[in-house]
Length: 300
Image (cartoon, rainbow, N blue to C red; front, side, top):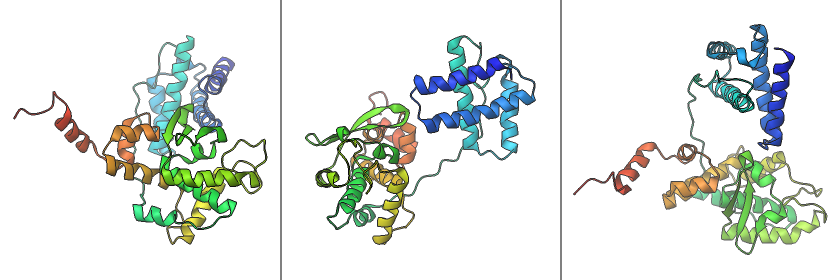
């Protein structure tokens, strides 16, 4: 591709960082996918983004599929192309989106494993009063209490916790912010941790959860600590933080039946994500609709 096309791609990546506030990891994923598109165009003598048409996009997807790219990766590739063209359309650099009508092979969505309440109880039955033990218990209680993602929990700062109202402000995917409640047990342990936190963290450190050296606790360290506690409690040693988020959603939905509330608490943009995540099928939603909606109720 020519220099103008490369500059347009770089401008789009800058747009992701500056305007859409995408994470470095997300931007790297877009860059890798769009470099694949750029390489395909170069080999096909396509010099400009205006020259790529729907037939070219389909040929590119077919080629990537033959090379072993999974359906999920193909969907991500097409999503990157559509995002790029939305930006180029906005800038007046192109007049069409060649990927708009192209679909990738469907991904078979697998339901994640789930911990039952007894298993969660065993995991959280942690005894000890040292700062590291209390920190670990506060982490696990908060993840289960509030349904946080690993990245969301690791990014929490002291100012994000409202002890008086038992709330925590979370920054999720796409820099979207939500406020979620903190359960009674989680709040109790969290307060205990905050009293001990100063033994590890310096005055300038803003992170809620810190390592023994006083810096923000990393994603990897949280995963390792949870796996360690799972082994001690006789649970699956490969237990990972996302299982607590899933347990939160599943157990809350089983008790309340309120799918929309669970969606809000999880920070899902699309309710279909919540539906898959919590083992609820669309037949159940249809039954709820038939029972509740005034235009759907059958006349007696």
